[in-house]
Image 1 (cartoon, helix red, strand yellow):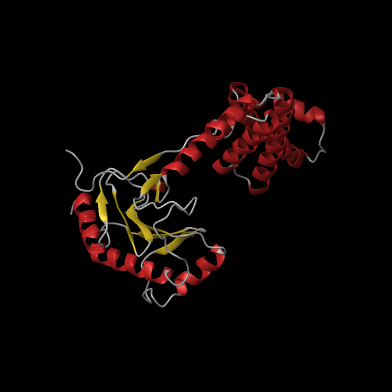
Image 2 (spheres, helix red, strand yellow):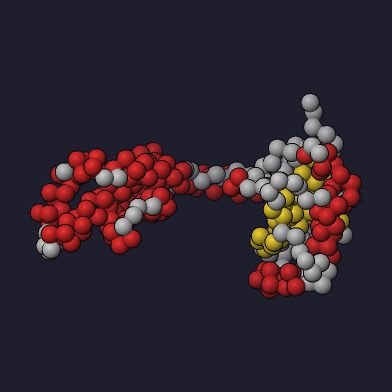
Length: 326
């Protein structure tokens, strides 16, 4: 069964609407969205991490204790004893349930039935929406709006206020004066500490690992931005350079420790300088290419982490339900 036909069937069984061009998780097949008994529900594919899963999102009025909600929901007698999938996340105004599969999608009837059970279980744990704006709680708002990637109720006045607040935050951010010396110092310190950690851990477990380079990239990015107070071109150039340097310095630490153990000699700056002076030759004889590859991946992640924050949000009405335009 084609994905569009599948979700048409889920929509029919749940009494909701199929929207072929909108999906909270970015899936190309659209999603099923609507409100029943005050609970906003969205059902669709979540393509994150290349896994196959159908996600059921249910939104409601904010609760004061989301931890209690998360603990209580799986125990609700409204849910079947043998629950399909798992509770993936719970916040103060939503729960997200994931149904993973390998080859065949869960039957539309099973998805629809469980979505109904999930909504029934929430009725004793969280209040549904009452047709008013969830932001100001006063203006009648009968129609759902996509708030970024989430369906919800927000009136036009609150939408405009949100845009103005974000525009003001963007202007305040741009007005910040960057502290380049501080960013450089903190970035160098983070790279130095990250290199020591990389070399020490690699020596202890006798292997290097990709996530170590990514963590170094994150640490360096955080330190540079913390120091400069904002994302700048200077920082975006500095961060990947320091990340690669940190990983290579970590290799020098690793080789220094290895020589100390093999030769039974104490640490000295002279030994470290000798390793650094011959690092490339040593790398070519060992895992140099792999180290450099990991360093570049870490630098790429660092560059991603050092991107400018977005001060924009989008509010879009749900498009016309039905099939996608061919």
